[in-house]
Image 1 (cartoon, rainbow, N blue to C red):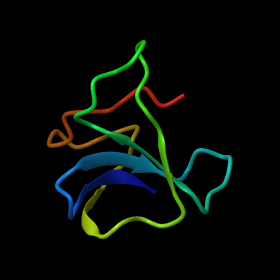
Image 2: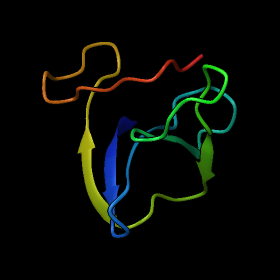
Image 3: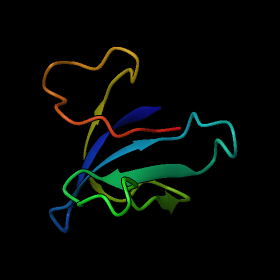
Image 4: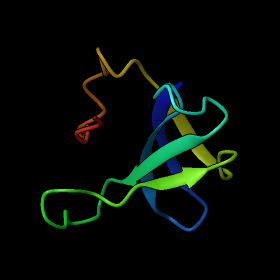
Length: 72
C-alpha cells in the first residue's frame, strides 16, 4: 500500500508498506522536510496514524500527488 496521509497534527507524509522488509510496518517521509545530506528522515509506524489518507500506485501516481521522494 502506498499513499499520502495528512495527520491530525497537520503534517503530510508519503508512506508505503511494500518495501520488502516487514510488510506490517509503514515507512513514511514528511513531504515538507528539508533534505539533510540529500536524504529525508524515515519514520516507521506499526499502524497508520489517524488522518486523511490518499492511496495511489507509486509507479503511476496521480497528477495531484506532486511529491515523490527517492525510495530506495
